[in-house]
Each structure stands twice: as structure tokens, then as C-alpha cells.
Image 1: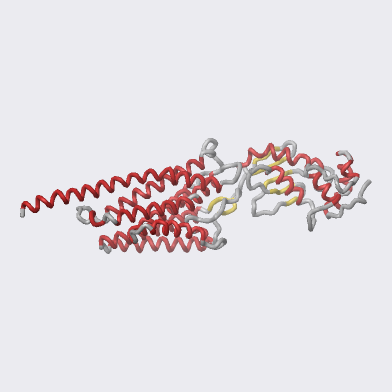
Image 2 (image 1 turned 120 degrees about the vertical axis):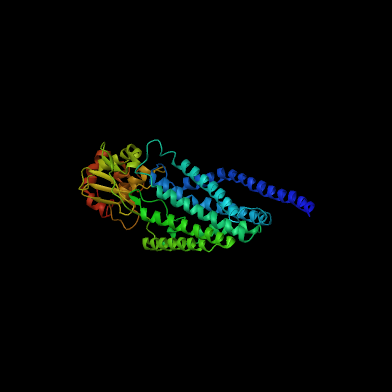
Length: 415
């Protein structure tokens, strides 16, 4: 009998050593950090408005990046869970708690996913860091994205443990992607992590209550899944109390998100920054770099309107919620981004607010509109306006401005 015990002991030690070696190899998962960081950075960069950066847009882009990195992290977690399930027969002979292995795997997977997420967010934030950006960073937005990523990891890992077959990885990735793609647009469910809302309006600020509810929803559901699994494998009923609390937090967060009705931001008071020469042009602080180009682009229009009842006094950027307007010398226009041609688009929008044309202008009306926008004046139809000097055009336009506004200019309107 002692001889048999001595023979069994080396075999037991060998199995334990194998478990330790396999667990140690899980450190190779750290190589996934650059992949997740790259996915997050590319996806986040695509969500940023063109030409400028501020903290609100950076935080929103970081949270949106989870839509891409989340399914990848879930697939990686499912593969790890599937591999771990195949070692259960070895872990059963060790002195460790059955909860040790899944907790070890989940901690490592969460660290890998969050490291990649934060690295990607840092890459997206690099243009903002030198000057501090506009407004303060909303840490809750970053944490909400991290919570959604942790939920992907937990759900993917438990899926791999539950069904340890290779197809589980592909099915997990597909299910994680479907969670994002199949939610109806315009429904309150777009606020469920990871949220499907686009970049916030520059003149809006994120609602902290919505971000907190998203964090609690993802964290509560992830905790319920993990604690439920631990209660199952350890047979400890005390853990079921934690499951109940986690589900209660998720339910309360769901009610809070439902009450938000798909609205994740609120109007915010913003002090415009202005350039007063050659005409007063005012924009959102994060777009201050666009002022020289905008001022140069709108100067011809302002000059040509100077002899009319709508002489421009101030040109001011408005929120996307408000329509473009022309009232009492103050012009309201939109500037959602600084993609190429933004100054010309602003001039076209301002010019279009001057008239009430039911259809695109033609003939003389189109020639006058092109002149106001400082575009080349069409040579056809052949009218005296197309051959007049700038001085003649301005004098004639001041006389016929009401006809221009009502879109009733015809070729008979000359001096």
C-alpha cells in the first residue's frame, strides 16, 4: 500500500504541474491588447467629427468603440472559457477552490480588454491633450464603455464554459454583434450599453444620469452572470443574494434608461468665440480655428448685402436643434464639422435663408444667388447682370432685393 501511494503521488504532482503550466500560458492573452487597442482606436476615430476635437466627442467616440472591440473581446473570452472547460478534470484533483480558475480567467480577460480599450481611447484623445480641449472630460462616459466591455467578456467566457465546442466562439461573436445591430433606431434601447447614439451636438452636454445608469446596467448584469456561475459550481447559496442585488441594480438602471427615452444629452450654455473683422463671426469654442476661413468666406456676402434691409451685423453658429435663420442682422448657421469645404457650405446655407424659393433658382435668380455666394456667375442665360461690374450689380441688387427674396427676379428687371 505505501508503494502504491508513492506511485500515485508523482502522477498527482504531474497533473497539478500541468494545470499550473496551462494557467500560466494564459498570459499569452496579453498579446490581444494591441489588437483590441487598434480596433478601438480605428472605430473611435471614425466617430469623431472631422477637423476638430473636444472632450465630449472623444468620450463619446471611446464609448462607441466598444461596438467593435466588444464582440472581439467576447469571442476571445469564449475561446478561453472553452479551453478552460477542457481542463476541469485536472483542476478537480487540486486543492484549489473550483471558483479560483474562472475568477483567474475573468480577471485576466478583463484586464486585457480594458487595457486595449484605454489604449485606444488614449490614441483618440491625443489631439485634445495638448490644449485641454473644451469642457471637462466626462469620466462616467469612459467608465460606461468599460462596463459594457466587461459585460461582453463575462458573457463570452460563460458561453465558452457552458458549451465547450469550437463553434461557440463564432456564435458568441455573432450574438455580440447582433446585440448592437438589431436594436431599433429611435427606441430607448439605443441607450443600453454599448449605446448606439451618434456624436452629441456641440451645444449639448452628456447627461450624467444616463451615463451612470449605463455603467450600473452593464456592471450589474455582468456581476449577476459571474456570481450566478460561482453559486452553481460552489453550491454556496449565499452568493445568490449577490445575484439578486446585481439584478435589482440592473432593473433600476433599465427603468432609468427607459425614462430617458433615447435622449443622452441636454442643451448646454456655451460662450461663443468671435472674430470681428471683416465681419463678426462667432462659433463654438472648439471650432475657433475655423474663424479665419469662415470670415474670409462670408465677407463677400456680407459686403453685397450691406445696402439691403438684411445687412449682416453678426454671423453666429447655432445648435443642430435650431434652424438656420436671418433675423435683424443676425445670421444663424450650422457647422457640424470641419470637413473640406466647410466654409463654402456655411455661405451656401446662409444665402439660402434669404429667399423663399419653392424650387432651385434658375435664370437671373440663379445668377444673383451665385454672385452672392461668390461663385462663378453662370453665363447663360445671357443677361446684362452677367456682364455688369461689381458696383453696378450692388446698386441694382439693392433696388431689387425684395424681388430676389420672393424669387420673382426675371430678365426684365434692369435699370
